[in-house]
Length: 129
Length: 129
DNA sequence: ACGTAAACAGTAATCATTCGCGTTTAGGAG
DNA sequence: CTCCTAAACGCGAATGATTACTGTTTACGT
Image (cartoon, rainbow over all chains, first blue to last red; front, side, top):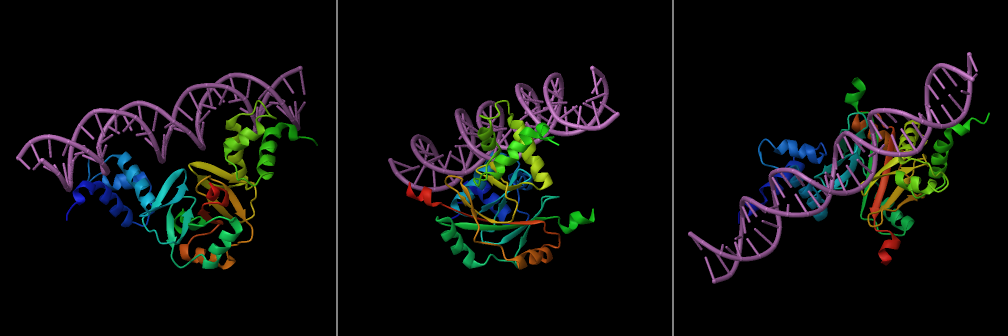
């Protein structure tokens, strides 16, 4: 089929997002890809990141220090954010109890389409400094 | 003592924050107080909101549609955010199990100073439309 | 009354993100 | 192969929330 040539940059952006666990910002993705795709535009990164959010191939985990951070792992999982360095790491061993979601639906009266649990603190690297 | 006159606006901002459960933005607070404090500056609202965050009298619950939202209720509780209208409501009947916090500390290797559980969906009002 | 330190207003600056628009590209039809 | 169309793209300008700057005002101690 090989119809991917038209989406070279789109595919590269998604691949970049999928290949990392740093929960990157748009600019991080841009800087990663720029060396191998010299004519990449930052606007294209933003445009495609928004696109991936819309089609459910990526999620936003909110802003850290005023910058939006993305996650190519759409499976629900818990995050830890260091308020010092801004690092975002996955906590795979922790899960939000499933019954909380239905409790949220009755409590809010609306529908629930996602839930996000985030811990914040100072990471081990920052504590050393 | 009556030394509050110097902090009239600061106090008004905190009182406004405490008196509502809408989890307001800086501009919302500004618009609320502007009629009764005509010479209030939006910068003052931002400055004091940041100050309250720093001294722990208020917390940020992140950005909704690109706008930071604050909460004068610093007791840990769960939020529900409507992605349609941007409303933020408290879910008092739901709590994050305490053991998850210690699990987060061991999982991250760092310290944990706060945790935030947020459900998103379409609220009952928006579903009617 | 005077000095000082902090709060404040008003406005300019910042910076992440989005928008507009002309260009390029892929892929299909003739 | 050439033309056509729709979508992706680059680039630069625009937007808008937030912050910084600067001069002024205020409360309070001396």
